[in-house]
Length: 485
Image 1 (tube, rainbow, N blue to C red):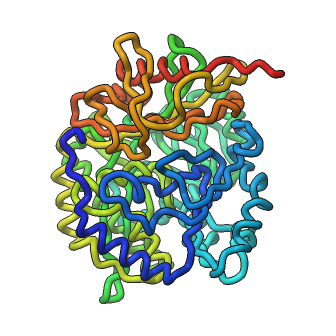
Image 2 (cartoon, rainbow, N blue to C red):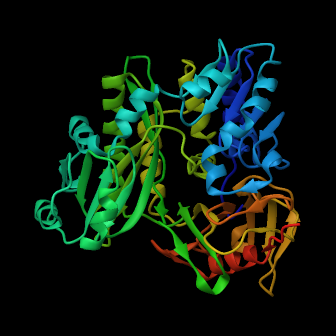
């Protein structure tokens, strides 16, 4: 829809066959907070049925037509969405999931973002967990090692942010002098970020666990780009780089109630020189990771795009990311299956033949970034106030905004290309059922779509468009305060 071509059915058939060969008769299991993970591949245009999990283990409930063969979701038993549930859902479903896993006739292939000992134990003997080694991932993603990684990969200095690495935080004046800006960004090696504007912020920064990366503050659009590296026949890797995004770091609209959100937009054009540099950086990082650790597959680079069209790298993630679900539309728009199919094949040591030449793909990416149009996704979160529950609507699916600003159900759907956003349609995904109580901090939905450029979801890094504001207000009206019985 919105002028975007559909996935080439021939490529889909080849990718489907190759994934089946890589699975070799083993059932595919997904373990992800979203029980509909991978839905962009097995629903929508030219769906690849081999990507539909036999069993989905997650936190949020699934919906038709994005249902896996069987679903075990934490909120189906707890009837609660909250920050605690978002972080602890796997413990809630461990026993139910184990009962289903033990009934499988073959050890499964487990698709997940992060593999740890708890997950390997759940998957059982003989299972294959499709993720890189946890120790390698932790080293690559460590914030305090990020600049050393960039230098080792040969990333150009113009893409690196001035920073220092310290075991203990010195005085703010010393940090400002070291990085050359009044505002500084303090990041913990174990995760966590604090933007320090004055002495009052240093206490929050000090509560992070060291060692620390302290970087100059760079003002601009938060951005990210998804990359995919695939081993080639010559002992190296082919690197495919997707269209970079514009992201928001969070926004709140007081006029529409206690909702906040953040999102990712691939429809806004990028300046070609900045995109070319970002693609080069992704290629260098992927080649380095293969030579140093022998790892390939999906990864993403976070960056900042400034008003002067400079791009600076800020973080790396080596795993399937939430945003890759919707960014898959970018691959489908040029006739290819989602990168995640190739990622699964790489994790299983199986060759990938349907991607074509990497340099041609990246040149096409560079052409497309200067054009308007593409997918977007907005995560909607309950920021404050009393617990709420759904009181209207028909669950996840395709909705349309009417003239009065209310959401009207249109049809079933689970793929961003199921909607025509430029005509007022949106996909509401991961809505809770009417019996689920949502507490402050809980994600209550995402809304997704594809625009040809006639609508923009955001006006700036923390500013939404009138259309997004109307959608947020309409989603708010689907909920009512929860009244305990």
